[in-house]
Amino acid sequence: MSTIIITGASSGIGEATARAFLDAGWTVGLIARRADRLEAVAQGQDRAVVLPCDVTDPDAVEQAFDGFVEQTGRLDMLFNNAGMFGHAGPIDEVPVESWLQVVNVNLTGMFLCARQAFKHMRRQDPQGGRIVNNGSISAHVPRDGSVSYTATKHAVTGLTRTLSLDGRPFDIACGQIDIGNARTDMVAEQHERAIAAGQEPDPSMDVKNVTDALLYMAGLPLEANVQFMTVMATKMPYIGRG
Image: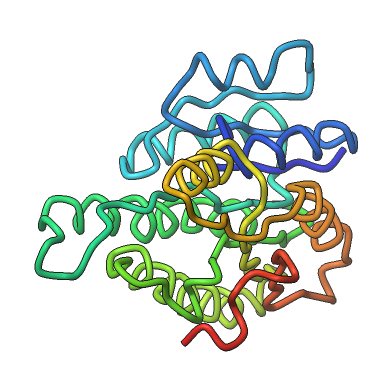
């Protein structure tokens, strides 16, 4: 039995990934703040473990990971996915409170969850596991008006590299998936707003392309690792965006 914890599992890419891993036979720990949404994802799934948790709360994160491992016996993988965009606009229009909130969720939240995953993977028998951080196209090339999101996603790349290095002695592999315009409810809403404003919506792709990529990364033996993977709509303006 393989086990995974997915953060931000109540909607979007996190929810789609949770459903894909459950369908593939994994035991899946579901982390997000909205317990009712997690219960909906878990409905009818006896291998789903609902773990309502704010990823910015160190104690809550520790309790969620400890509780999952106590119930399942081990943690094979973490998909560190929870994130938010925050206020859009030039830096002088970004409220400090919005900046701090985005840093708290996108960076500190990922740190706290990776910290707990690393703790368990290092000490379990057999030792080891896999951590996959959700970066972004913006971990490489920013969109305009995205200072908070872009800064945190660049920082996530540093987190990924350091975890990959620090995990080597313990058979902990760490990689990053950078996703561009997967069709989730959030992207659908962006498309609707673009159309309403008379604009051409950005190209997008089926979210299944993302979940298939994650299942591939998860299926590798720990002696192999996808360090960075970019999965994006072929025609989106990424190459040459800068």
